[in-house]
Image (cartoon, rainbow, N blue to C red; front, side, top):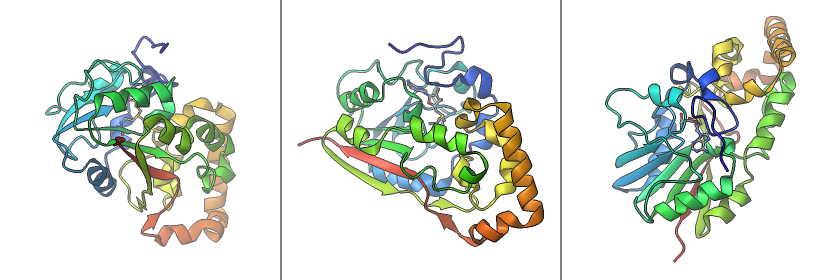
Amino acid sequence: MTTRTHDGSAGDVDYGTIGSGYSAYRRPDGRIARFIARALGDSRTVLNVGAGAGSYENVGGAVTAVEPSASMRAQRPDGLQPAVDAVAENLPFADGSFDASMTLFSVHQWSDVEAGLREMRRVTSGPVVILTCDPTAVRDFWLYEYAPAVLDTEALRYPPLDEIADALGGTVQVEAVPIPFDCTDGFNEAYYGRPELLLDPAARQACSAWSFVDDATREHFDRTLRRDLASGAWDERFGHLRTRPTYEGSLVVVRGAPAG
Ligand SMILES: C[S@@+](CC[C@H](N)C(=O)[O-])C[C@H]1O[C@@H](n2cnc3c(N)ncnc32)[C@H](O)[C@@H]1O
């Protein structure tokens, strides 16, 4: 059973506590949006599960959003439809209600990923699109040198891609999503070539993994990264990333087409 906090949050974090600055730091990125749009195809109706503040809802057809956290629902801009207060694991829609469905940066928070994805498959006649991270790749990032506990947490939270594929059934394709240098959606890898920006505590708070680590981990990160930026040690090892237009990290789009 999915338990929910006072805010309604249903995942492994309470957006009533950490969600207030989300939409300022997690602005949808147009280049990532194109990958999502391509995976959705020309679907006329799209379900967005774990919709948060409504990022990427302009990618295709008419969107129905599902979002359990009141704090996140309150950040949806005027002009978007209000989100339905529900959880992935129990979607209040009839079988095949939508041409396509998507869930973006959300599956790693669900209490029962298999149940949630089966629900998405049930209510969708066409593709189910998942923007997520490959847990086998999340530690291959410079942040691991400065805050290993953050990426160890992420590696445990993100569902293995073969479990996602099994839950979806049908035909599943996985595509790496190159992250643009000036990515506006501030997940950790978005700062691959701009390490200074991750020194902002509010930028870190917009990435939920940081809420799982203690103050000592955050202080160690801040102190050692500042030291290495000042001394040039970060640039000596990772400075080549400052001129890379895109970065292929752990971000992937998974697209499940129905069987038959
Ligand atoms: C990191 S945010 C992503 C929000 C949005 N999709 C985006 O790309 O900005 C994760 C969202 O998943 C939602 N979530 C967590 N557990 C959920 C569940 N079991 N069912 C539906 N949504 C859930 C959270 O409330 C949160 O809004």
